[in-house]
Length: 130
Image (cartoon, rainbow, N blue to C red; front, side, top):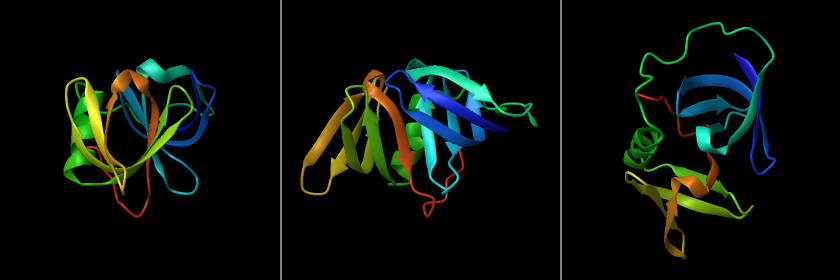
């Protein structure tokens, strides 16, 4: 399903919905990046066509569980934060209320989920929400 989403901070995300649950949506952008947006960061979602498949059968998956999977995969992410700043690095851990990103030479950033507008990972790191 093709959609456009706007975050509370005003960022637009366009692409195809890969998966969704009540707490989050995963979108593949036209250039292949995967974008994870938590419900707390969404302002609105607009579908440009009807749902072609139901949302994930894993609807009980939480936002934290998706981040945990990404941390296990040791993916590079770029976090866009609520204040407009960005953190880029390797997702190293995901806990009940925050995640940790290891920056190249910048140490480890601990970021509460509420502060994350969206998380983007690159397409060369094949992702499936399990």
